[in-house]
Image 1 (cartoon, one colour):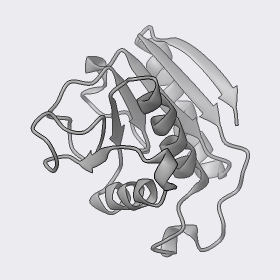
Image 2: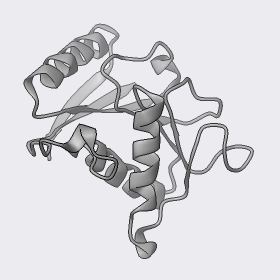
Image 3: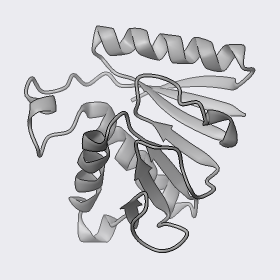
Image 4: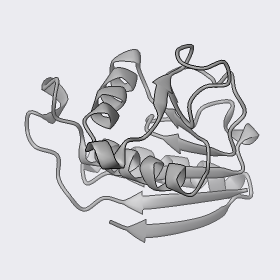
Length: 149
């Protein structure tokens, strides 16, 4: 199994978490990566910490330009086996090989994915949580890599 951590250098705008339209920098990057993976024919599960965050990611994906549309849905919506990109704050109900983790902790169901994409946000507190997730993956024997964004 493999885990890639993307180090996000961009700071969030001060009102990002309080605004209904702005998203944290790592959420934006996650959506862009999901779009690229969709174009490669891959099915992706985006895991969020809360229902509010799941809706934020959903709305952000709807805001992509028409020529960059990403078929996606919140878990439980859409076609029977879900759209190519599924978003949820709960465990997945459909099989996917790739999970993008936007939660602070590693979810208990992580072992069902072959590839994990995670982020190291610029915020110090979130950076520390990312270090803990990195340690967890390393202890579980994942192949780890980091990429700067």
